[in-house]
Length: 312
Picture 1 (cartoon, helix red, strand yellow):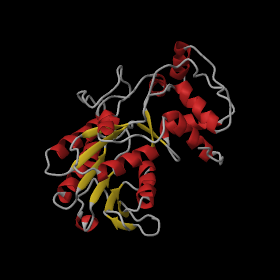
Picture 2: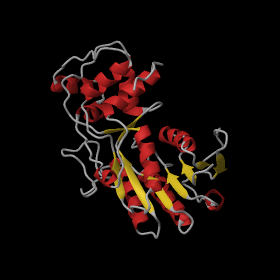
Picture 3: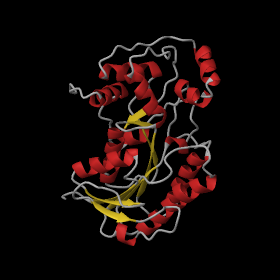
């Protein structure tokens, strides 16, 4: 490989699988550190390090690498996960790897989350200048890792992606894509809360960008598509990629909220119908520009999922 050698953690997850393919395609030598042995593409090295909640010897994994992209951890907020588990996996394991990488690598990229900065909704557009106010154990564990990195003598950067979309995404975004793919009319036309999304391809490009910067930013940076969008815009873009009309019904928001409440899905409606917009100003200032807006990214995603040719 002609590019630098990267140690990638979290390669088995949704984002990690895309990062592995992207870094390899870009010419980087990639070594993955995994909990257990997994199938990797030809030319990719693999080191099994075990459970991040336990003590890990990073010596072999770090030998000869130029940069670390650390994406492993508990991937999202969820019920029934003790806060201690978040701390051990998302905070302590990150700090242990970063300490082991000191003096060995030229860049340490930590994949954090917008939830290190905010809860699931925000009344104003989030910027890196805002004081972080995480509202759950997941967000607090990510923020604690960022703060610990700042105390180390290490060329680091933390990326805070907003909601990531792409092939294989699960959770609320995956459910929304499945709804858009159906022929059913959808009752979301009246929802006007703006939310920032980011294509997984854009996140991968941002990671490559910060690896290549002459100096490490040593700070947290938001990663987001250029402008926030509403749920009707998301559905319309996805259905355009699926070669369907929007099929949106404007059910009043209070009525829709009541239906979700009756179904026991109030939290899902909060995420669906409320605002969480973010401005990736710091990445822009260091020369990064997303390759396309959210509407185009969603259209492309839906076209790929339906096997259509993507028109440039």
